[in-house]
Image 1 (cartoon, rainbow, N blue to C red):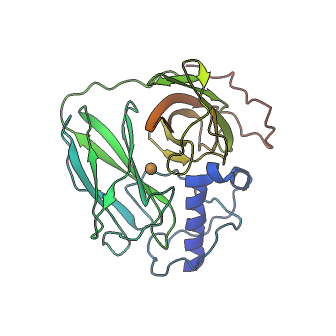
Image 2: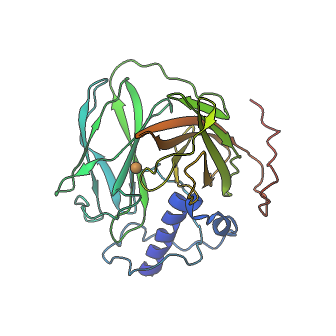
Image 3: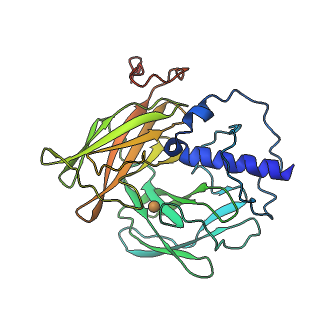
Length: 315
Ligand SMILES: [Cu+2]
């Protein structure tokens, strides 16, 4: 049934994109390998908007494909329209076309914006999180400068009206010679602009994992973080190797720091690069970390104080 297929996709989208934020990790984590409903209709039927359906039904995660790996998904396609030259500020334009092939113009507002646009170099050495403007014809534009030649990945994180949340990804290729950087070693602290951000907690595959990031400046905890896009912090996690994308929002907090707590559910073991956006003194800054997700079995029940064993990594 089309409606069922569609709802399934909708629930899945929520779970993948916002799983950590909503704390549905448990629900998703418990799902047994259920008989997967046929997905043959996927992406072909989108005429009717979801009828106000609140997708708090039991999520059966038949497909745990992370976001950002596809340029086209569910009938929606990300179309870059601009070629970027190294070091040149560019009016970067793109569209998202819908199942009818036309640019989408109706979006749901999520975290104060209709669309979040993230651009990283494929070696994960650079990160930008920007908010393009949309013209009436559905063409998005944003000022973008990519300093160095090389391969970049652009992510559009959005939810069309009547559809599920999606993250589409497209490669941007900037001509010229470039030197890839290797992924920095996993670390518990990052510094940016005189701020030190420390990371507590471990990523455990397939399980909502608590991460606490603490911001300090000049050795003193920062307790007057400013809300940015409705929260004290935004965390994007990208998997090294394929740049699978997880946008994780923080646990609701009335405290403006120094700690920001997230629940992130990563799809597999391996290395991830975490990018934390936070605002203080009127400026948004990004602190980034490499974090390793253990390769062990997910623990059956979360015992918050039990720390996952990470002893058997060898590199
Ligand atoms: Cu954004």
